[in-house]
Length: 274
Image (cartoon, rainbow, N blue to C red; front, side):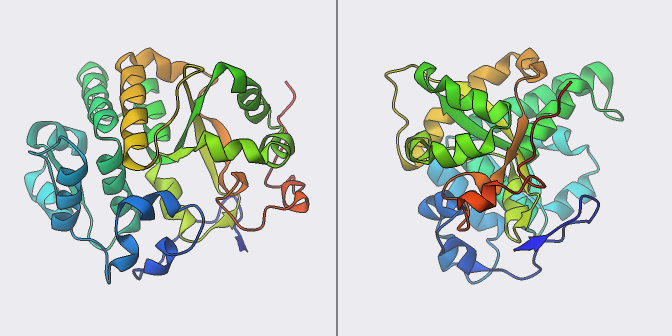
């Protein structure tokens, strides 16, 4: 485990590392759906397109090399919206994980692209509106947590930075909660995990009797719920959403999760008193 200062710039590994997907931890969910541990190199846009077509209804969509966008000249979001092609850089962890999120949350990603375009038409593309800023935070750093009314206390603990209670004392509860990674930058930085690695928590209300399905069906279930939430863009301005979430503290996402680990207040920071 390395410690990164706040101002240090993260650099992802340059080589393909299939072992990331063969070990227990934060990448388990991806490895259960995509044969990433079996790949000998970064998946190509063509292979990722095959996975997209296998798992989603986006049969006319595809991933393409980023040089296609460079030659086209259109703005990134506009290019996706008009062409149904998603550019990605070769041998790039960030764009690989971005592509996998499209495969897992196609409805939500389409809604987000549409919201970006609506905001661009209204405010232009040079400066991001508040809604586009929040969309980007969710897109890069989001972690989705489906919460039933009886589990609301856990959400309150997380939002109030009561990390030991939320993660350690209620550890058994997380086996049923099944948090889902949405932010592809989270995945990229987890290739070289460091103290300080933090996502943004996005909660989704779940009826008390509902059960989250396993595997790809679970992703489909949550994708439907999140897409419906985001249709009303104002939900992005809810200050209770996108609160900090120390990713290595989520039970099962890191191996060194004893009581002393959660006592490190340089990472598990208490909430600021206002």
